[in-house]
Length: 566
Image (cartoon, rainbow, N blue to C red; front, side, top):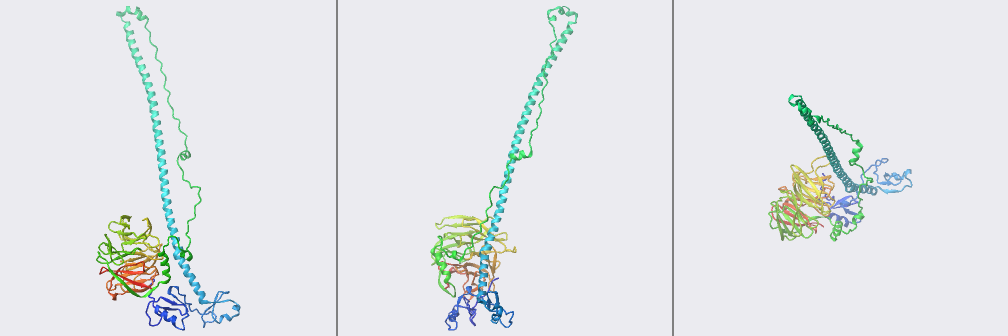
């Protein structure tokens, strides 16, 4: 857990550390910095913001002179030396450098390389791994289609074989029918001839009788002849000539699976942005983007918080969550589904009834549209600026709890739950699911109930997890960076937001310990913007375009606006 209370290093000063004197290696608050630079002894010292401090040279004892520390670098030998070593003959005439300066350069190099790994190499590698997984799915789908095509083609061929077989069997039946018909005709011929012979035989027997004596001398008797036996032909039986076919012949009838004659493309590895390219003004950048970039160079955390104003949100019974757009308008919600749009003075503009509760269930997109979750119906709705509402995303079996629209690229981050499982899902601005974050590198569940969610300027995803009693932060690739669990006393995080300096601001909603914590983007505790002694129960927070902090309260319908940057 990367947590640390940074205090001023001047004795008896307990203010927040914001600056660092490189020559003195001293942490300074704003007041002590001014005194430090006004002092005749230290007025020429270089004082930088704490994050830009130069590392202090560690006390390393010289190997050859144990009573001295190394503080010089021999450039030619690349060896740290003490003040006595430089007079040794092996270093005579060699160029020497300030070891502390060189050490600072090495540390700066490490920081740069760490930043490159975290912000570019890791995320790019994760993107390539994701691309490979997508390719695996594409291959499986393609091969399933090919297998289905092979089966379909085989079924078609089987149908043709069955049709030809049926035709040939029908042909055989007709040949049989013709042959049998011929034989039946021949059989009838011999039956008729046999009947004729039997009749003739009876007639000849009668001629032997004395009663027919005279008939044997008649003309009829003289003309009596036995008809010759009818001639018939024997049938010629058909023969079956087997077809000539082989496996290759059948294979040729069916399609084949081949690789196209195409050289595979190399996976596209995005170029690493340099500081110079990041500062160039693109066509998509607005004047506001340029102003924000300039503000980053000048703004810092103030040593005190100033109340600017206070307004009441009508139509709600408390202020659980606030969404800020870029048009000077806010959406605020309570725990019973009332969602109200107001201007920065608290004047009501419109009101909606939703199924939302005491979670961050709504957000404003880069286009100024309102997006909110419907946990009951498991959908995410969108209300455009012309007040038309559409069903934007269906979340299937998952209940969407919290939501945030990225100010970096317009992606939609959604905290969801289903049957005890919990995840954060990233959709692109058109509503296509592109990422799911559920477990850390050790397979452990990252979330329990992410009821508020936001994104930091470096792409980190920050969630307030009620059950884990922690702010869980992962990078844009979904790798766990740290979890912030407060400062020793009970900590139950509620509303959360970030600012243009990368600060994470979160409400502690534990009764009796209500406070507003601010930590940096690495999880280091910076200060309490609001303390329990002030009697305010912060619940929902957001930062507007003027870098003012809007704090919604649990026990009233008021929103208090503070200035905390200078």
